[in-house]
Image (cartoon, rainbow, N blue to C red):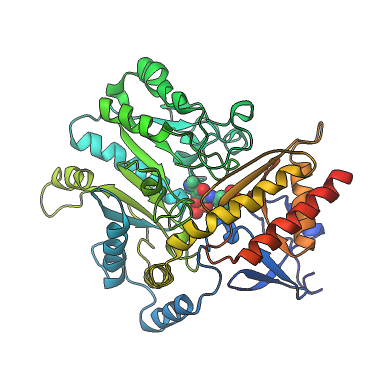
Length: 442
Ligand code: PXG
């Protein structure tokens, strides 16, 4: 509980049931490696890497030191018509980690900004090539691309859209790929569902005409909407159709980037190279906010070379694009990933994690368990007339028992830091199993 003289009222909390939270708050005051420390002195095992972001675990010394040093040396450098070495070094390092010729990187401060930036770059690219009529975006049902107007327009989470009016005017959505009848309890990529990508050609391109479509944006593996793993061949099919009709393919890797699927990016894991990749979260291990958009060389060249020399080429950017503290955190984070081989570690421990989470199928009300890399989704049968309640109760019970999980609707998502030990996997899944048993009795 917070101290008596501290009121929680003034803070309007994001994506939170404010009234319920303030009546029974959950405050954390410290973090180290795999654990949070609560204000009442309890250790809580982090089964979610914060919000899918602290991929190397918390308060890693190397990153802490790098940020401290940068704060003492130079707090801020103007981002427009000026620079500092850190942002160039991070761009170069990220470019080296990216597949294909994705080798130019634009910085921003969050995943939402990365998505809006990517959509704007797609429009600028087509315009630079004399195809400015290409301004339709294609997203996907149940997609999550942050909370900017661009992101909610291409996103497919109804609750995030319904209050906010007309949004971007020219958007269509692919169907999502979630189907329990076909794919329940699949380990890894489901066999069923690649054909759903064909709707891009048969319905969406047929309706809008390819000459009007700028880009298709999907999460290679959807996280926020409840861990939806791409069916085998699905992403490849999207790539083929985008190539056939010269549509840009954008992978939103805000969650999947930086090791979550066992490689630097899911593009590499799935062997499909998009034209643009958005990233955030794990780029700084969550130490300092940062987002980024990587583009293929041809996109950068087309936009930059279409403007007269000595003029600004892309009218877009943020005060804090490439903020020195963020770039210091990113450099140290990339060192930690590399020195500790954390992406390979994710690959190594993933089979153990898979085995452990699939044991949850025996627990009450579990209607699906799915997993990929270091991510798992456990879907519960909703309580009649009370959607999301069962999963949220399970979340509360886990927290009481010293384990942090994340829920969306009646789906539980696990995405622990990539440093998790086998023993901690057992603890995470064991406590979740106990909580599910108890919720089943309620
Ligand atoms: N794209 C994707 C794919 C995301 O997952 C964003 C964009 C937006 O990022 P920012 O930094 O603007 O929040 C996200 C964010 C959850 C959860 O528990 C997921 C996100 C954020 C908070 C919670 O599923 N993803």
